[in-house]
Every structure is written in C-alpha cells, then in structure tokens.
Length: 121
Image (cartoon, rainbow, N blue to C red):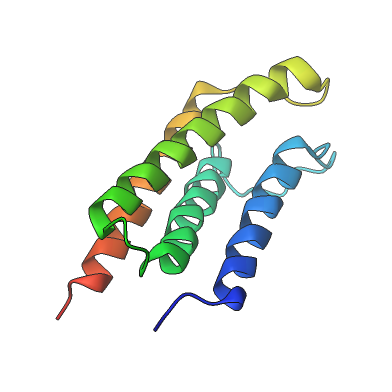
C-alpha cells in the first residue's frame, strides 16, 4: 500500500493535537486517576506520532531503518522543545523532565512496534 493523502493528513492532525494540547491551559479540575497518569498520555502521543508518520513514510526510498531513526530523533526533539517552550512561553505550564522521558520512550516504542508490524511475516 503506497502512502496516500489520508495517511499524511492523519499524521499531520495527530502532530497538531500534540502541539495544541501541549500549550493549552490545563483545566482546573484534575481528571487523572493516579499520580503521574499524564505520563501515559505523553507516551501515547509520541508512540502515535512515530507510528502514524512511519505509516506515511513506509514506502519512501530512504529505507525503513533510516525513516524510523529520523522519526524517533524528530519526536524526541519535538518533545524536548515543547517542554522547554512550555516554561518560556506559558504561565500555566512548566517544563517537566519526566514528560520528556515519557515522550522519548513512547517514540522508541512506536518505532519498535512499527518495525515489528512491518517484519511480522
């Protein structure tokens, strides 16, 4: 299956959601059920980021390993950059090293799962 516009726009939408929610003023009512539950959200967002962009890039000529490597680097860079910018550009959010760790771990796991899916047969 060749990459298509649908796959591209889903990945763009997911990336936009990550950026938007990262800078959105958090609601005043805590809705998480346990301490650090937000790390699961961070993991999921960056897992999805790598997984969705990899689906789009799967049939590019650069090769699977190169695409996954570059996607993980971009995801980690994006996650760290957003954490830094939260501290610099907002008054309602603070940078959190553990958020960046969860982002990075999600990106790595997204790459591993993507690779396993491609090479399952």
